[in-house]
Amino acid sequence: MVVEVHYKMNSTSSTTFTLPTAVGNNGLTYDITNANTGVVTVATISSQTISGLSTITLDSQWQSVTVRSDGSNWIVK
Image (cartoon, rainbow, N blue to C red; front, side, top):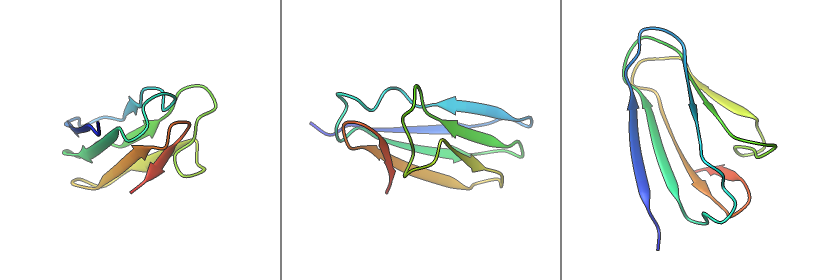
């Protein structure tokens, strides 16, 4: 089963959204949107990556990223 989760981060200051483990969550998808003027950092746990990166920064209002677990890491869709 594929599950998609949507998050709107609504902050005027810097904040971090930490993804859950990708391990065992193959197909799990997160859509994260920066809904305000603060900087949103999307991070992982352990040594997992997001398309090879340790974090992704959403530094503009309404900027978004969609990531999907491949069962061991996160991949930008």
